Amino acid sequence: MDNQVENDFAGQAETAPASPVETAFAGPVETVPAGQVENAFAGQVETVQNAAHQAGEQTFAAAKGVGDNVRAALEKTLNETRARYAKTKSAMDEAAAVIETSMGAAREGVKQFNAKAIDAVKADAFAHFDLLTAAVSAKSLSELVTLNTEFVRKRYEDATARAKSFSEFARHVADETATPIREQLGKTFKFAS
Image (cartoon, rainbow, N blue to C red; front, side, top):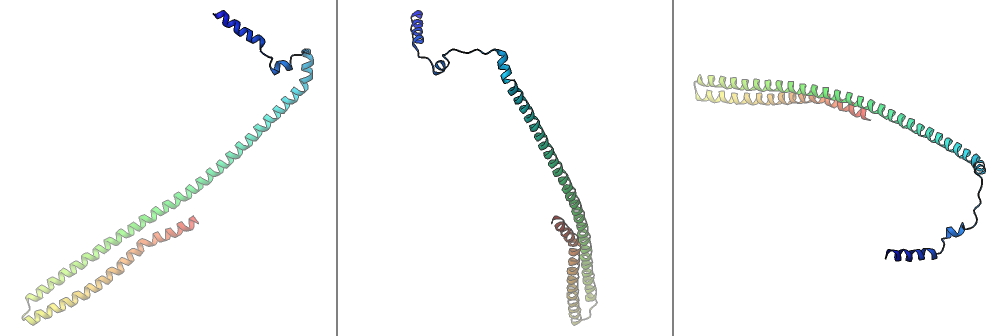
């Protein structure tokens, strides 16, 4: 059976029409001696080789120039970034020092405020003790009422003066605390612009 299949295909191959390429080159082929082909194309080959060499050199020079330009741009950017980092670090160090100064002023202000408050409580305690001592030695009810009235009036005057003093002191401490920060913010915003 294999022989019959081969025979069927063999018959088809013999009867197949020729392809267009086979018909175009079906005529007689001329042979040219090898020396003549080399001589005919030698000048052209040399010209193509020279052009390729020149194009390669130009491409290398252009690539080298681009590389140098990129390197110069990167170095410039790196130097600018370093300079900005140094300025920013300096500004941050100054800001940290200012905040430390402000916090120190606030801490001292709070200490002084607490000392004033303790003094006020002591003064009130002594005033009450003096009132009790005077009340024990009072000879009449009217004298006791007079002592109490004077005590309340004096305590009201002291409380008013103390409130005014505390208010002024708190404003002073707030100014001492805020002034360095305000000045630093002014410098920082001037630096940023």
